[in-house]
Amino acid sequence: MKHVLFAAATLLTISLLTFGRGADKPALAGKWHIVLNTQGGDRENDSQFEVADDKITGKWDLSSPQPSTIKGTLTDGHFSIEVALESTEIGPGTMKLTGQLADDGTLTGDWAFSDYNGSFKGTRVK
Image 1 (cartoon, one colour):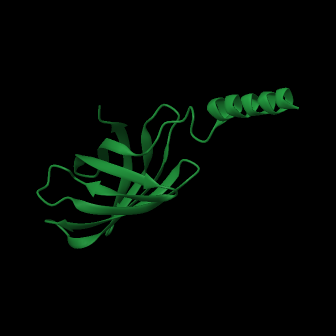
Image 2: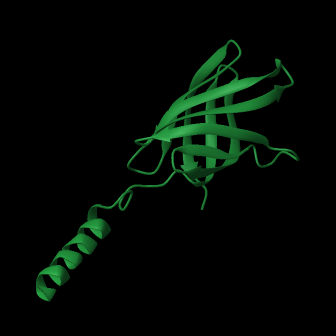
């Protein structure tokens, strides 16, 4: 009986290490360089994402003296976040980003702010 329990525990450990939640998948948490494709050209910033269960929090535009707060959700590699911004051109509003975390560790998706929208790409800052 001891051998059966030991074998079962060993197989469970190996399967968790090999196939466990997120074992070989890149994580969203961390610092990212985000490039927004806009009609006026690319807009870049560095942001920090934190993930707890399916909730995303963090800071948008780390170069700012007061980075904006990020709130969102993460489900099966797909995320949706909102960032309250004060634009010098448009005024206050909420930017929304939806996208996915690719297997190669990049972020891709779409953004929208007021009447403007476009695509974006993110790469991890090392």
